[in-house]
Image (cartoon, rainbow over all chains, first blue to last red):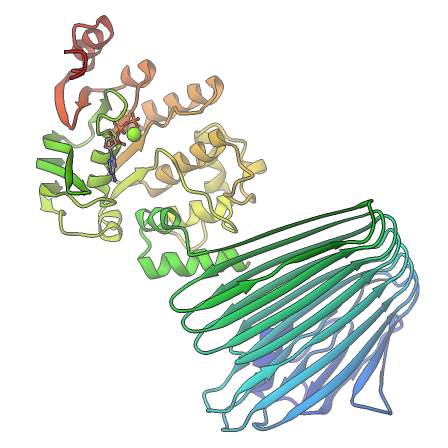
Length: 310
Length: 241
Ligand SMILES: Nc1ncnc2c1ncn2[C@@H]1O[C@H](COP(=O)(O)OP(=O)(O)OP(=O)(O)O)[C@@H](O)[C@H]1O
Ligand SMILES: [Mg+2]
């Protein structure tokens, strides 16, 4: 058990990064209230603090096999706002899983905000799984806001699987994602978002398929409840012989509002791009079926949303 | 025992009233297998939905095991042991076959072996299906059989199945009739099967014919069925008359 962490911290870490007691296998860097609460490096993963601005540089050794790295951020001090820059250098042919995520516990009256800027340099043939969960809690009047920016450059034949989710409790988020795929590179981005109350969420995403054989896929699933608002701008740009697919599915409830504005842009006759977008309420026959299996209407609704966002 | 007393269901659209179920009184004793048959649009599905609580009758009463359940909602009726397998089952994005069977069984986590046994009873190879989503990637016949498996999982006192044979291949159909027959032999449940299929009708203790919103005939399968096929019994078409 890490002494720099209390029970609120470890609960947040479990929510956002599946860490038990603040521990995780492989390399670890826990950022707590703008300080470093824990750092473990391994033969495959080196982590260094930046000297010119807040943040860290993460180096994954070329050819590494199944390297794992947890780099969660937690904020428990009300009123703390920060912008953090993390750069990832993934060596040629490396294979790694990076678990990021940010949890805010705000019991005070002031805004807590984390703006994370993540840049990935993924070398030839490397395979990266990047998981990011955002979560807020605490019943003070202070807002819990996050504005993540992710930029990734994939060299030839590289692969990036990015799973982002905003689990709950974030009042305002503006998310920017830009991924550039070189020849034969592939990215699969899955975004899951649930908002309620007065929350607002905006997601801008651009996937640029820049080389022959590049492939991109965006799967966005969202649920907007109560008076929350969501706006999506997923854009897939094809500059070569490539294949891209954008799929956005939203469930709208109560007085929520959702805009889904997908775009596909082809700058080559060889680009093959598809988008699908759908917004609708929970299907009535699904609710009824689960009720005939003995669930109440509320239980049925909850189960359908859970499945939809799983 | 299930008892329907003067059940009626009408819909009003553009000031025009359509009586879909006109006046149905019906008693189904415990452990009986009753097949409801009759022409398309006769009112079979509507009747089943009224019993389950998916529709609310305009008049009349539904009694289950002596208690009036007419005012109870879907969930309450389900918890009293009434179950209904949809004619056209819905699909779910993100709910797996195994999850749906767990929900149906009422157990938090249905054991894998239990789920597999249920799928086998409807002729599905369990290993191939248990982790699949109940979404549009499943074929019509697959979804239909999974729907029947959810009803088997409920182990309820009253099972209503709406055209379980629809879209099901011959091999699976054999398995299905075996399953119904075995279930009926135990007499633990009262079964109402809506069907047009001779082999299912052959399993029935009794048949009731639903036509134009009324039960026009009811009796032992051995009497009623030959009458239907021989044409001794004809559905009344006002246009033809
Ligand atoms: N909401 C509704 N509004 C108007 N008409 C309806 C409504 N629901 C059902 N009907 C009509 O009621 C009649 C009975 O329908 P029902 O689905 O019960 O028939 P069924 O006997 O199950 O037929 P099938 O053998 O084709 O399944 C049909 O004529 C149908 O068009
Ligand atoms: Mg029908």
